[in-house]
Length: 229
Image 1 (cartoon, rainbow, N blue to C red):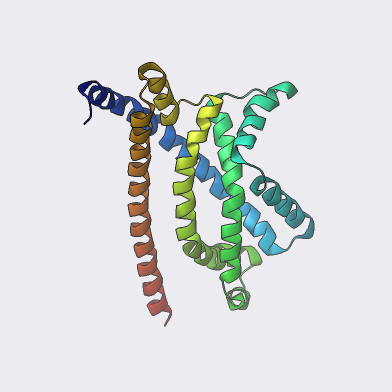
Image 2: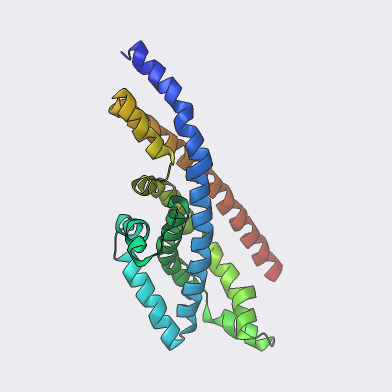
């Protein structure tokens, strides 16, 4: 049985955890993922174009970021850079790290999607006098992003949960808010379960949106196929 005291704590803390989730966790996820997509598309296109020097730099970036822990990257940027005279506030530091980290993973997703587009699409663009850039931007990239949508959506959901690591660099997102309540009430089990349920709620909403997006993309892809036929 849940005691009245514990029930009161849970009811009182729900809003105190949810509000930082809406005002800090969600914006951190959205902003970071938007920047990550820009980085990922640029990195994937560089690799897809086989520009030797740039491709090596892109592969080095992906290798380093994917091969080191996200938490270490957060500590390097927030706690390490001040020794070089570069001091960042917690939120911008978190955005930079999450963007760079997710950009490396998403770049591989988009690169694989680009390579899945038939080579004939490039040849078709050349046949109608499109430049390489126009062919990539108007024909290849839209098809690749449609293919990459499901794994990128999964990455977004994973990033939402990973933002809890930002508490380690004093970002006041909902996990840090929970930690502060735990320190005051000494009810870790119930409160950590509560924040877990809120993360689950956010993830469920994103999963529903992912399914809607996939259905729309499949519908437009089907319609495009009919139009082409």
